[in-house]
Image 1 (cartoon, rainbow, N blue to C red):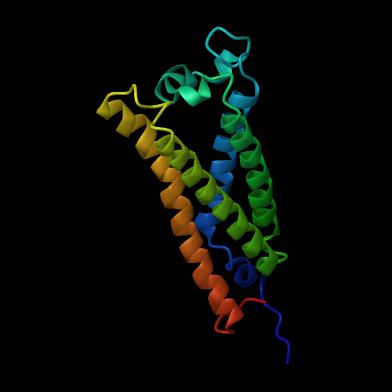
Image 2: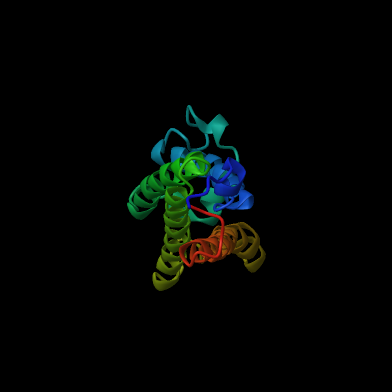
Length: 176
């Protein structure tokens, strides 16, 4: 016998806090990618600088954002936009196609986590070429903590989502 699930039950496969994170993160990601892709017009004094006041400081902390010769930050920004689209489509589909939505949000969160780890590891392997000029306080507060959030929150979201997906696959949950 096939049971019809309420939209609320079906939407619960993707936790509310995961959807919230993906929505909030998408705004930050679009803003960040816009800064990178609009450079040098987004730099201080540029015609779009007024949209990016926080970057006046950040380009001094992480000089990769200021470098016009480093292609990695541009590539990372383009991938950010791809993961944002995938995540938002997953959020949109959460109530109508919960299993597909769960897989899409899982993919987007995995991309965020992996890409952030690669970004930080690339800095580490490169001898902190873009960040070694910072004092410890600046490095920790303006580089480690913000980037750490882009590791910690997606990891927590992935754990919560994985538990629900596993339960759904094993038939222990109300998800179809």
